[in-house]
Amino acid sequence: MTATPHAADRPGPAQRTEALESLLLERGLIDPKVIDGLINRYVNDVGPMNGARVVAKAWSDPEYKARLMEDGTKAIGEFGFAGPQGEFIRVVENSASVHNVVVCTLCSCYPWPVLGLPPTWYKDPAYRARIVREPRTVLAEMGLALSPKTEVKVWDSSSEVRYFVLPERPAGTEQMTEEELAAIVTRDAMVGVGVVHA
Amino acid sequence: MPEAAVEGDEDNLPGELDLDGPSAPPRSNGALLFEEPWESRAFGLAMSLSNAGRFEWEDFRAELIKAVAAWEAAHPDHEGYRYYERWLEALQAVLASKGVVTPAETDTRARTFADRPAGHDHDHDHDHH
Image 1 (tube, rainbow over the protein chains, first blue to last red):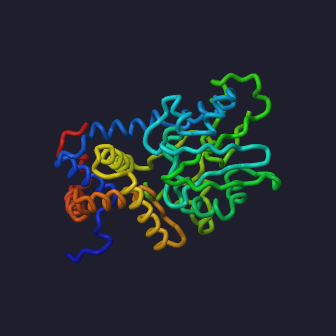
Image 2: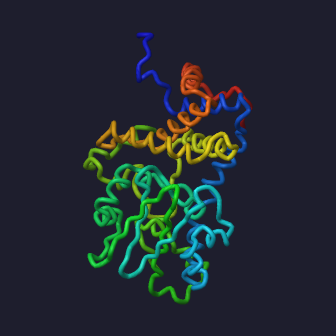
Image 3: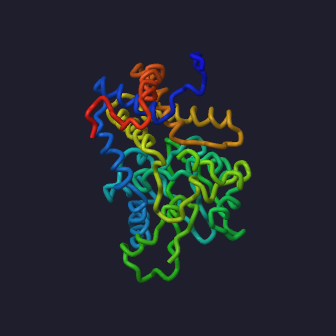
């Protein structure tokens, strides 16, 4: 045993977080109930189901789609979806010839109001580095094999602009209602690492 | 369960996407947003303090970018990356820069928690339910 501090003596993140919360509470800077509420909101209420409704409406209503392409944040706001990380959302549209995929190379920028918090793989160094260098290979590893004829565009989200993919509407869904369409739209398709299947 | 976080890594080349482990890309909308409870607290603390005007979100984001870049530079094989550890570092850095709480204060308090007897039942010194 030695009393000399070294790296291994540094408290772990769970203890440091608890310590930080207790210091902030003592100073009257936080309310644990507010924090509980924020966590609950992002775990249960804000998520890809929001984005799926936006996509379904864009597929069903050409005028809405035009507004969405013109100003993503404003058109998404028509649903009441707004808030942090939603200030500058730009929608990029997939087609038969172009596939868009989104990354944040520097950290984890992501359009929270429509997709909630990003999944672990989106924040992973491997995804952030490799999707830029070899998007086709990474997409294939994630289960999306694209035709060599399809152009792949990689969009780097930042605090200035957060990208949101409008997936291609799959064939055979012409009779589906907006609600039915929303049910088939996945988060992965709205990040561009997947496509929507009927 | 930190052990689980590295399980299966030997099957992956450095930098290869981990398709089966905790960073595996879920193919449905289901997502495990927080792997451990403290991660959700660290998330909520940052959101709450920013909402209350203790710092600008952009200042926090700049610290997060720095923390991520520093970790990646120190770990070229990217093994063992834990996003919320970088998040916590960023939060501590932005709070220190605003003179709210220093990392040393946090470490001192954390050590008193670490010194609690094993099996101690999460006894905060406040009545948080």
